[in-house]
Image (tube, rainbow, N blue to C red; front, top):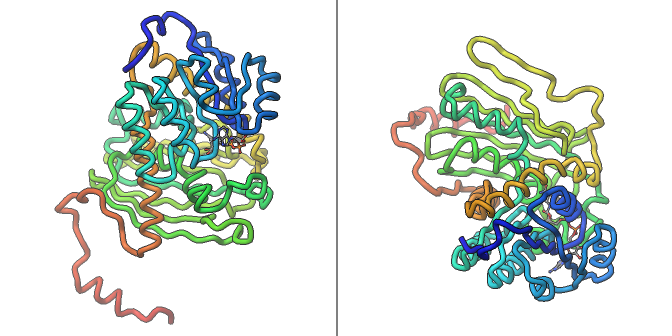
Length: 384
Ligand SMILES: NC(=O)c1ccc[n+]([C@@H]2O[C@H](COP(=O)([O-])OP(=O)(O)OC[C@H]3O[C@@H](n4cnc5c(N)ncnc54)[C@H](O)[C@@H]3O)[C@@H](O)[C@H]2O)c1
């Protein structure tokens, strides 16, 4: 990894590109870290960059990435809309600057691969924000897999039932179209939980999927709802159901059942709140707490969600800064983030073709229903 010789012993110089909603989380996180200082902010809207610099006491406000890089940076944080991530990452890597990029890393695989390749060949780190991995509860579920108490994950279920009102899609021109947003609930919301699922369950072998738009069709071209079956190279299987058409919202639950028969459930309700382990069924006992406490307001607005994410952004940004000081890779790299992108793009492809997307063999020896059973099922009348 490239690092200026003195970078471990001095404060890293950070620039932030994109001064919209999520940049606040980055500014607040860096403000709380000793090892890094934001020296410049950049936005194509110069007034927005200037207002951000004044609000956060940052020395420089600029309106282009080259002008930001000219300040002499160690790290760039990318907080721009998804399809613009690639250009900013490539320019930063070419300048020998480490990059911390908001999710999704990109909206297509070719871009994600160009980004990871550019950072590799420049010898800089590419980290991608999946701050939910830093929930202590998410790490407890991972620990229950690692210490054998869950065993090897065999079954997973992810339920993402969120609320967005039409104003959410109307607020920015880039939201809700395939060209500028790259997708809907899968690309923007469910990607966090797909990341957790693959972190727990391992390498994906096959993906079956369907998408639809039930509520927001007047405002968006992309899907507001998706369902998938995901098979893993270990032989494990998972289901996913995700929507921004729920109201009241039920937040997110991820259930993992392991080879010991034990099950853990991780819940986020309301959206943006800290993840909690709401169920641990192991060793003959079931310990549970309500996944949906009655006193929580379910349909949360975006600024409340983003503000609640600050502590977890801070944990991940601290991990990134500390990894650079150790000359090590951060916890979530561009390659890791490309894996969850690949899974959700496979749901789109499966939905488009009606066929599963196969990446790797599903293990042989897994029992398959005999052909007479599947033939009988196919012969059933569609309705009675
Ligand atoms: N990790 C999370 O939980 C989380 C939460 C919210 C948003 N995000 C991600 O953060 C990114 C930004 O989301 P947001 O809600 O802050 O968007 P936003 O629209 O509020 O802000 C984006 C800003 O980037 C600026 N911009 C656009 N193109 C630019 C360019 N080429 N150079 C410089 N500035 C440019 C815009 O003018 C705008 O100010 C998205 O990719 C989104 O998925 C992540």
